[in-house]
Length: 213
Image (tube, rainbow, N blue to C red):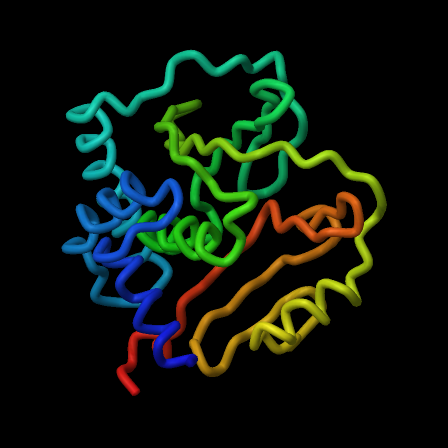
């Protein structure tokens, strides 16, 4: 089953299989796929991401993906990686600069993985914006009305049942898939009517994910 799941995830990341809100994300990830970095050193990663952003901005301009109508007065909150704005009674907009990732492509892979595992809070990429020369992806997500605080032991139980092992604090790893899932504290996993909603996830792919079994 895990081998089948890994194959399915490979097909989603490569754009071969469809997923909710996935088409534009898959297209951009594939567009960036030929810009692979050749070293893991911090300085080269920074240079690569800067060059990758230039390539991405050209794609954005060529395909009219700049978002001009964000209502910044509807500010809700922000963390290290993103800013959140209320769009309407049912949706929020999140501006993310991919700071948690060494490449934009890895950020888009994160969106696709989230949409696969947590489709009820799937990210819809609506475009991009720039603020103070920083590029942000603009994603839309369902607004979750909280009815109780989140019990992190229930998060752990749910993820364990789905093959993810708790390796430290609120971070998890699926050894059979080679996928890391981090930062699942009670502000990133909400509870409504005793159901868990994963609204902010940080997925990373390890080398093991890409190995064929």
